[in-house]
Image 1 (cartoon, rainbow, N blue to C red):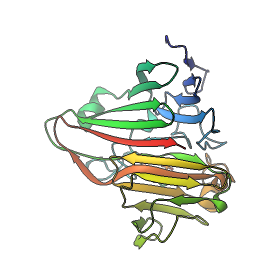
Image 2 (cartoon, rainbow, N blue to C red):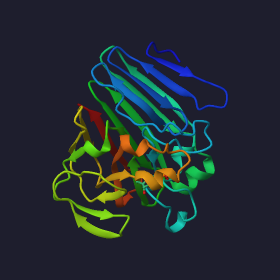
Image 3 (cartoon, rainbow, N blue to C red):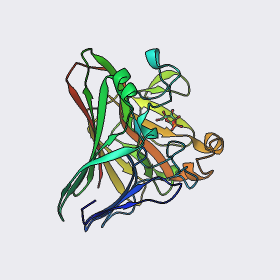
Length: 280
Ligand code: TA6
């Protein structure tokens, strides 16, 4: 890899990591999952939460950072029922395709290594682009490579680090309707989102800009191409039941995910872009 800012770190029995050290920021991207593990700028500490007990040997999707859910979000349904939750690509290695940039910005593109059989079955291909400038834009692009329309749902499943979830507010979803996945009801958001227990919500909102305020900093989370924003914190009991979720980790994280949950159909030959920008 011939780029002054990027080094591939290969450790036996561990996922390969692309270590990005740039004058303006640092980041780590796991080749397994095309998964961003950390991102910090000169001004801001790491934006992302990664579980202390995350499995980093490639045997399981990584808990924390930015997993990519594709070509479905949540449990597999219909023709794919029985297949893994959140799709395939957070569990496969990705190839670095291109690197471009200089000392002001940097772009990396990766594509998942899928078997020919799986590519044929899906009829879709995916690519991810990390564009670092003054902030980071993650773009997940999907192309329908076959001759039939194909269904797609997906999420950029970002786990943000917050200083204390009890003093954290998420702004920008006021008055949105959301599906509460814990009660299976549809509710309306009043005021900022504040979390004091288990939360698993799909906000039916394509709000382009949100703000996460943990009283120590304000993170701006922007998006495009989404029909929903997913907000998740498992809280104490659920976290304790997940071996790869450290017991107290729920106190310092919140997932805020730009997603398509409402059933998108991609026409033959078309490409769809879903983006999330992290900055502020
Ligand atoms: O994005 C929220 C969610 O879909 C939740 O329902 C929750 O289970 C979470 O993702 C984590 O899923 P995972 O398959 O990574 O354990």
